[in-house]
Structure formats: C-alpha cells, structure tokens
Image 1 (spheres, rainbow, N blue to C red):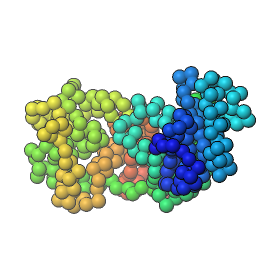
Image 2 (tube, rainbow, N blue to C red):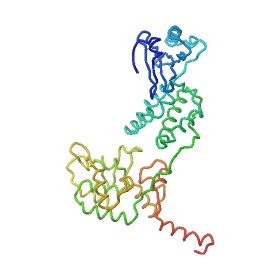
Image 3 (cartoon, one colour):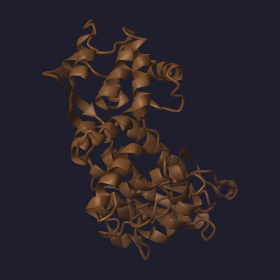
Image 4 (cartoon, rainbow, N blue to C red):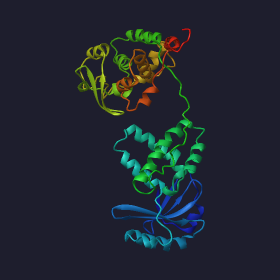
Amino acid sequence: MANRRITQRLIDVLKPGKSVREIRDTELRGFGIRILPSGRKRYFVHAQSGGQRRWTTIGDADKMSLAEARPLARARLAAIVNDNPSGFGDASPETLFEDIADAAFRRHSRTWKPGTLKVNRQYLKNQILPRFGGQPIGAITSGDVRQWFASLRSTPSAADRSMPVLSVIMREAETLGHRPEGSNPCVNIRRYRRRGRERFLSREETRRLGRTLAMHEGETLAAAVRLLLLTGARKSEIMTLQWQDYRDGHLFLRDSKTGPRTVWLSAAARSVLDGLPRQDVWVFPGRSGPAQGLDSFWQALRKEADLRDVRLHDLRHGYASMALQAGETVLTIGRLLGHSRPETTLKYIHLEDESVREAVNAVAPVLGGDG
C-alpha cells in the first residue's frame, strides 16, 4: 500500500504486479485505487462508521476518469460517515475479498498456532490474493474457485493447502453477513491429494535403529530420538518438553498441535526420562532454551543405521502401525498420537505384508475358502 496524490497521469501508467496493489490518495482521505494482477484498475473509498470500517467500489478506471470518480468518492464517503445507505445511489457497497480475509485471520490468530498462522499467510499472499484480491466477496462463485484451483495444478500440494484457507475466509464472509449462509464456493471441489510416499519402519529396521542408538548412549539427542520412537509423539512435543510436564508416569503437554493432551508412557519410555539429568527446566536443554540440531543428528544417525530415506516423522507412523499390529483400535491409537479425528489416524497406519497375509489366510476359511 502506498500513499500519494492520485492523478490521471499516474493512473494511466500504473502497471499490474503479481498481487493486488493499492494506492491511497493524499488529497481526498479515504479515496484510492486498486490495481489487480489482471491489469484492471478500480476506484474505491473506505471510512469508519459505527465502529466498523466500510468499503465500497466507485468503478473501473478504464470506464471512469479521475475527474468523474472524485465527486462520487466524496458523496460515498459522506454516506458512509453518516451511515446513509441511500447516499450510495444506484451502486451498493461492496465488501472486498481482502477485507474479509483480514477479519478471518484476526479471528483465527487467537486459535491457530504461530507456525500455522505463518504458513497460512503465505498461502494467502502467494496463491489466493493474486486471484481474488480486489473482488467483491459476495460475487465469487464456485466456478471462479474451480478455475483458480485448476490453475494451480502444477503445484498440487500448494493448491490443496490453500483451499482450506480460502474456505475459512468464505465462512467468515457468511458469519459477517457478506455471503448467504451455506454459499461457500469451496464446497464439493475435489482436491488433488496426490498420494504421499509411504515409509514405515519394519521390525528389522526398528531393531537396527535401536542398535545404532545404543552406540550413542549418553548423548542427549539420542535420548530424544529414542523417546520419539517409544511414544509416537511429535518432534516439537519432545524437544520442548519441560520437567514439570513429566509426572505420575505421564507427559502432560500443555500446548500440543491439537491442544492440551496426555501422553501415556511405557516402562521403556519412563526409563529414558529417568536416566536423564535434571539440571535445567528443559528435558533436552540447549545453550538458551531447548536443544537444537536434532535434524542434523538424525541425518547422521539414519546413515549409520542404513535408513537413508527415513524421516523423523516416519517414527510416528511406525509407532502407529506397531500399535495396530499389537491389537490396538484406531480410536485408541488416535488418543496415543493426540489426533482429534479418526481419519487422521488412518493415514498413519500401515500393515506389513506378513500381517496382511496372515489376515487373508484367517478370513478365507470363514468365507468358505480353502484356507
């Protein structure tokens, strides 16, 4: 956003960018022009009324000169300040997409994790605003969203992750009365959802990792990896553990990804924790705060164990699969992992081929097969 005196010459030479540009006039406060990525230029006004900021579009710069737009802008501004809808003449106020996006992010900034908020802002800036910025929120259709989604097919992961952000903004528009209830244009649009690579530790690989960890006995980060393996917890949950979180044989996490939760510990997991020195508030202390460098340590460790394609997060998948093969239900495993939805847990579960073979052979006689 820039503040400068808007002139006809300036309007004529303004060029579009990758995202919406906005220039606010220094001569008439509340008046401005938006330049959309498509090259379209639109006059607008904004002012405070009744504790709320209101916006309205004056018209397109290619159909209306600045000399024509300024008097209309003054009249519209007066109408907003006086809360007089009739002052808008034939044109009704239009709430623009980015204004509702701002409101949605303000609301969710209280509940989204900082990392989630940061990532969602990036999707808004890079994928969503270049297409929908400057448009009236109530005019966006399902067809518009489908067209936008199709344009992102070369980056399906970004497309799939941007869609929920757009949907949140559309729901906010409904909540604030700028779209009819149930009009979310993001509904029933099929995602790309390319199947991610599956990588689960086999029993033999788990044993091999255990033997490699034993060679690093006494190292802080080795203990952290062992705890990840034994609990199925998230890396952030383990690396930010404080001793006050460990009591009565459980971990009481106050700020996990899905909110406060309790991690039940096996005897082996408790043994790892009980063997660590309590010289800091952090279970895995660094120089100033939690220990750093776990990813680098893991890179070296997996090379030693000949597990070069295994990520730290795969240990969490492995924990879920082992629990399933031990006879635990999906709901129980979901509680162990701290999932809020069963469908999330299903993505973590994988059966070894031998387990599947045993299941097939067990079911066949019941169904009248030869066994």
